[in-house]
Amino acid sequence: MYRHALRLAASLPVSAAMVEACLSLDHPVDRLFHTAWTQSLDPLPLSHRTGALSGITGHIAESVLQTMFVEAGFVHLPATAYRLVEVRRLS
Image 1 (cartoon, rainbow, N blue to C red):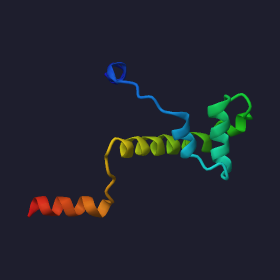
Image 2 (cartoon, helix red, strand yellow; image 1 turned 30 degrees about the vertical axis):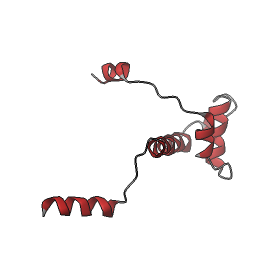
Image 3 (cartoon, rainbow, N blue to C red; image 1 turned 90 degrees about the horizontal axis):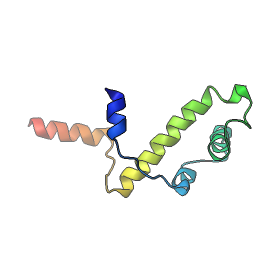
Image 4 (cartoon, rainbow, N blue to C red; image 1 turned 120 degrees about the vertical axis):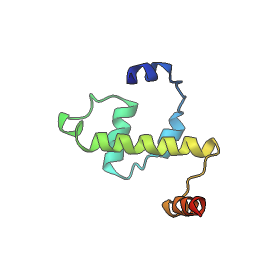
């Protein structure tokens, strides 16, 4: 079922500049991601390919997606704003 949805999904181009803007190369884990992303996993020791690398990959993916939403005109509302909207709907 999920694979069918993935086959139907459109692929969205993501520029290297957008990914780079989400990185902070002052942080060691971001540097690990940068190495894996720009070169491959080969330069990284096996111990660096697990653990924090998967976490930072998810973090970068979220940041890129948020950037894409902003560029598309979506605005992020803080959780308190969502609660206010729900309270007003109930009134």
